[in-house]
Amino acid sequence: MARVEYQQSLEALEADLQEQGEVVLRAVAGAINALESQDVELCDEVIAFDDEIDDRYHRLERSIGELLAQQAPVATDLRLVLAVLHSSIHLERIGDQSVTVAKLTKLSSALERHTELVEGLCEMGARAAEMVRRALDAFAARDVQGARELVDLDELIDRTNRAVVDKVLAMSATPGMQEWGMRMIVVARCIERIGDNAVDIGEQTEYLVTGEFHEFSDASH
Image (tube, helix red, strand yellow):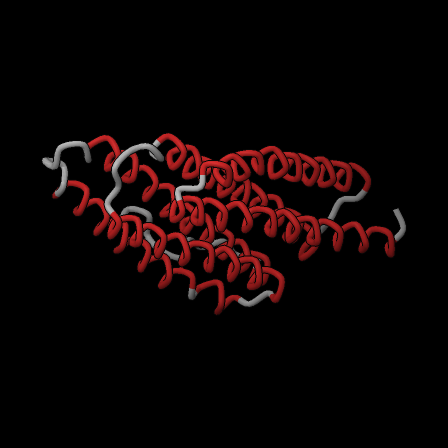
């Protein structure tokens, strides 16, 4: 493989990652909008996104395999290939989490819901979507500081998640709210995991730039 063609292949990998990210962002936004509006048709659209996200991940994985078979990347180029692959995996997981939110919203559409709790979940979702956007932008710009700032945003989501769980537990004695509330705890957990995966993409940005991998926060906390 000629050097020019090799470089074009690397650029194509990164472009494919960003395109996958755009589809994932649409899925996240769709899931949160469906939760807010109780739009069952929109839930179905988000669920359908999952196939495209998975297909994009598998195509990117195959492209990496073909590149490695033709050329042995070294140093920075190898870091880029590995960072793209790991980031793509995290995007695929974000897609799965968005689908779970959409499925639970659809299943709960006929149940009585707590408006204030839905607002809190949608606030979490908006922050999670912003984190994914920032993670993708930081990767493209090789912005380590921007990637590290994702940790602070993630803490805001974690706090909201704890507040949501507390509210669900507080209303557990309310007749007719238990089933909806328990499903919303899972929704909150999915949104929290979207934020966590955005942080993971940020960690790949630092690895790409520095050649060293560090977790931005202690998972045991």
